[in-house]
Length: 401
Image (tube, rainbow, N blue to C red):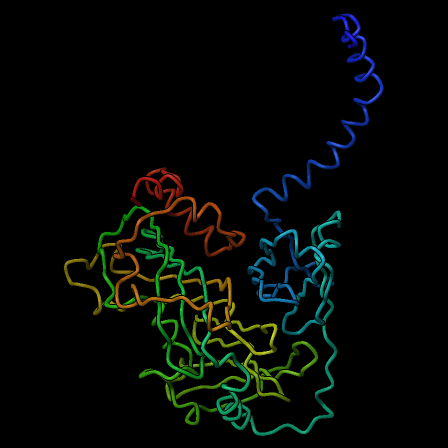
């Protein structure tokens, strides 16, 4: 048996520090970013999408080509999403109306010093193409909905937000994480499950309660989805107001005007496939992007609508409540097309989203890959916090149980 004295042990330790410690520091230096990124088994991909003139590109589709995993850039061109370490070798695809699609390996993007993506504007040759009457494109788009969108049963998961304003300022804010068993815009909205919910403090004068969940208004506001409010697009006057492109397909921008001049709808329709890539209806915006199977699905929604004075209870006239509106925004997180994995139970779709009584799970919200703060969200957050100087996170903590 060999014995090592204390002094010998100190000498060995000192020799180790002298000879190997610098290398250990270098190893730790390079490992630290990987460890921090991979905490919890997830890696965050974030950045900004710009055009060639350095202006942000809003509502671009950002996703993994090999599977459904994606998000949309905000109106400021920013995006954020989580991937697993196993997806670092997959391709990140960035596509947007009017620009050439870019694909880059996830790992290569993460290794870039500047986390930005520059899109190059598409080149059009519309003049050489014989176009149909604008109305024919609209009607063909209606006929082709089942073919162009995911129309088989699938599960959608989305973050759905609503802010109630009075006097132009946010007074109440609600976030729901929603699952929908759907068949796309060619069919009525499917089974809705509000899976998670949280809300701010309620500073409203008039605590209005909707008779149904706001998600139903999102569905009925889509001019293509069957509902009692679906407009007769044949009776609109349609004209071409511009052109664009999406992933190699030329796209027409058409504007339709109803009998009432304010009733306008703008559609972005592919010339070859009649796919509808974008819908603008008054203040409502619907953005569609391609799933891995090539079919379109809704990826982003935003809207704002107000109340006329005769819709406000008379006792609230001449108060801030007389000028009330809803601001709405939704980000689609996931699309599941495997029928065996679809799990949706009906809950909350016929209840005001601010009145739903669901257990509050802070861990769910802290682990959710939240989109970058949009102008919509920043404005709401600032207004809610200025009411009494209480942070939104603190409001969530105090109000939700």
